[in-house]
Image (cartoon, rainbow, N blue to C red; front, top):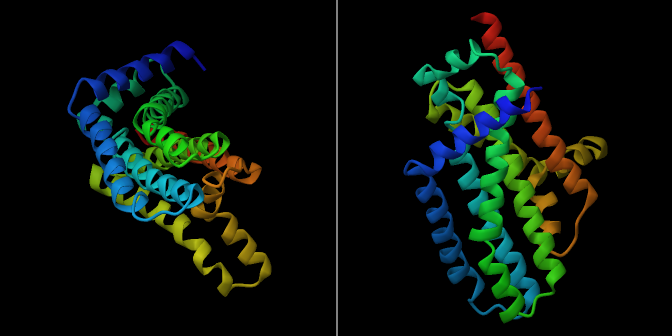
Length: 243
């Protein structure tokens, strides 16, 4: 893989994001939703830092899902609609480099949201609720991993869709399936129940908000991210092959 080509894609995505309305809309909207959720849910008679921490990071879970789906839904499909994807196909750049450059962009934005948009609220948890720092740290790691995973799913959806709405629908359906599958796992036998519960996004994330860095959760989010990136590359390769 040519790293310079991937970095070029990465810089192009950053320039497009911060050079249009998308940057202020996503970052500002995320900050506003965070503040709204925290004000409504967190400071409403919470008795201790355990409750406050869980509610805070569940709020972050919601906003990072929304933000990363919005950012990713047009990442590839807009290249198709504008004709720039065909230009990339005729350039000396591989599908892996295209996907990896876009993925680096998603990781960067997810990091910005986790550190600078969400970062104020964990400080409030640490100072106002006296929440242990390790809980604040583990929750932030969980938010970041969930955001990266969501962006990878969104990239895959964007590679399949013909427009942004279809891409959004595909991404939401995948995430919604992985979200609710664990709630119905009890309806199946032991082996199937265990598999379905392992695919449950919420069960992996909630451990992070309680001060734990679960190996299974880290492996789930990272392996899931790489799986959807791999599928995205394969979709682009099939499109290149079909011409």
